[in-house]
Image (cartoon, rainbow, N blue to C red):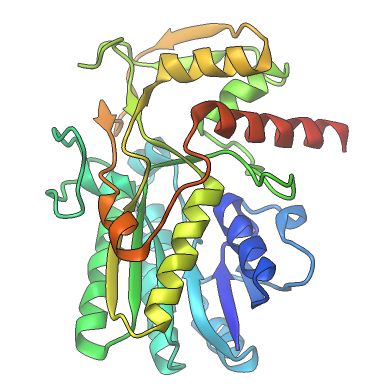
Length: 326
C-alpha cells in the first residue's frame, strides 16, 4: 500500500514525501506543477502530473497505485492573491478538496490528512489561539480552507472517512540534510524573501504595515520549521491508522516573532544588512497569530526538534546557497 502526496513537488509536500521515504513507506506524488518544482520531488517516488480536481485521473491513481492514505497539500496559499482572485482559491482549495474526498471515499482510503492554516482564525484577539477559538477568516484563502475543513468533517461524520486537519502557522526552514527547501516561484514567505535579499537575489525587503497593535508595529507570527511540521503529519497519520476518526490540531511553537525581529535574525545569521522598505498594510493580513499547540503535544506526543528561529533561518539559508551553487 502507498501514500498519495498531492502537491508533492511543493515546499511542504516534498518534505512529506522525503519523510515517508525515510521510514520505508511507498510514496506516490500527484502535482500539476502550477507552482511545484520537479527537482524537489525525491527520487524513489512515483510521480504523476495532473490536477487534484481531475476525478477520473485521481480515481485511476488511487486504484492502480493501491493508495491507503492521502496527504493533501495541493492548493493556493497567497493571501493577497486570494483577495484579488477569490474564485480561483475556492476552486483550487475547496472544490478540488471535494473532488479528492469523493475519490477517497470511493476507493475506501484509510486516512486523509488535510493541509489547513491558521488563517481560518482570522483577526484573533487571543494571546495563544486554541483549536476551539472562533473561526472567522478575513481572506478568501482562509475561508476556502475553512470550507474544506467543514466539508471533510461533515464527510467524516457521515461516512467515517478518517480525517486529520492540521492548521499550520508560518512554515519556514528547509530539510536539515539539504534535500529540499522552499523553491516555489514567486514565494511570498518572509524568511525566504529576507534570505534572497541577503544573497543579493532581491534589492530590498518590504515590511507591509508598521502600525499594527504589536510591540514594534509590525505583524507577529509563529514560525515553525518544516521538518517539525512534517513530524506532526506523521504522528497524525499513525493515529488515524490506529483507529482515530477525526483530528484537528494547531501546528506551531506557541511564541511569535515580528517582521522586524525576523529581518534582524536573518541579518544576524547571514551577516548581511538588508535594505528594508516600509509599505502600507496588505489586504487580508492580521496583526498577530500565535498557536496554542499544547493539544498535539499532549495527544500525539509531538515534540519539536527545531524550535529556534536562528536554526530555521540557518537551514533555509543553506538551502538557498545550495541552489545558487547548483
